[in-house]
Amino acid sequence: MLNTTANFRRRLLRWYDAHHRHLPWRVVAADGAPDPYHVLVSELMLQQTQVATVVPYFHRFLEAFPTLADLAAADEQRVLKAWQGLGYYSRARNLLAAARRVMRDYGGKLPADRRQLLSLPGIGPYTAGGVSSIAYGRREAAVDANVARVLCRLDLIEGTWALQQLGLRAQEILPRGAAMARIGDFNSALMELGATVCKPRRPDCAACPVRRHCEACAAGAQERIPARRVKAPVPRVRRWTYCVASDRRWLIEQRPSRGRWAGLWQFATLDADAPHRLGVAVTAPAPLMQFTHALTHRRYHFQVLLCRAKRPRAALPAGRRWMTLAGLKDYPLPRPHARIAAMLAEITAPRAPAPTPPRSGC
Ligand code: SF4
Image (cartoon, rainbow, N blue to C red; front, side, top):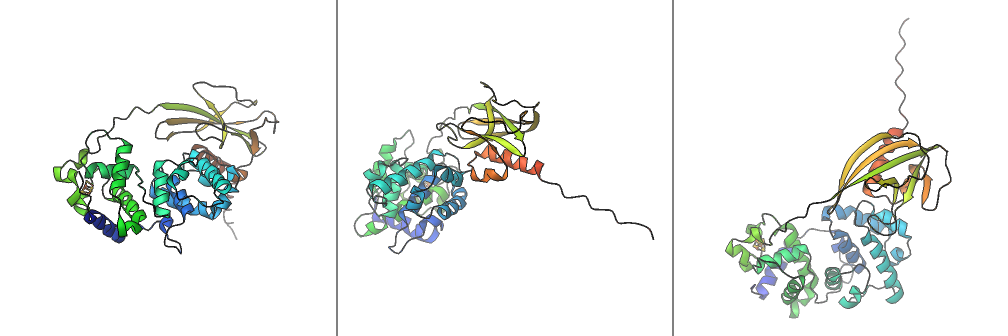
């Protein structure tokens, strides 16, 4: 088992001080700790998403909703729009719901207590531990995929492991006594080590500050830990998307309030394997484009068709609208539909007039 000495903690923290990435959510406020709201936003954005992708979203999100109170007062569609392109939109809805609950139950101050954090929508053990330790300096572990990998290698855990087991281990190695002041940095350092040095493939053990404490490295087993999971085949789903034009507007519809891309807007789309009626009479559709949109557990194949409504601006039921392309900027769109909107903008943009040939003659 890993030797949990002060030496291990010291090495890790020294390395973190010298090498950590300067990320916007790590900026400390006057009290010497990062803003809890910033930590919460970043932790939710970072779930399933790379740091480099999150940074610009984080800046834009805080520009739109500078404080937790601003977020709590915001309309859900605005929040989804700010999240557009980041995917996993339930995170955005949960963040909004959590902000509203904090305003209602905690006077607008994000709680420091892990159990209270866990009671908020969308906050699981990792996020609760992260906020509690990083923003408030509480002695709480935070085990994400990076930390789990580091712990498995340090302790040479070759088989399957339980998150609870790693949680206890992570709790055990947290700083004690005078070093408690650096609990948040210690958790961040473990995450940083996993993200930048102890990577899933080819960990850079030569550059690792804690290699002397690492049993996997000593045994030459680091490449096979953790054991690779056999990936299930990713199902392929076919969609037909109809770009229905009417008087310089396009038919859009809101997705159901549950499921993937819930509550977002899209061009009229049918499930090719279980098609229902389009709901408006249209001219013969012509192919516009086709592409595949890959997610972790699904591959969507979009066949995009272009057509016109037979009756201009026909009345639509609730949840459907005629909208100009410029007007779409106020609507949150799933990434494939943002791509289709960009294509429509390109093909409908006014062309520059051809240059007039110079007159010849005398
Ligand atoms: Fe990971 Fe290698 Fe460091 Fe061990 S020595 S923690 S395997 S980078």
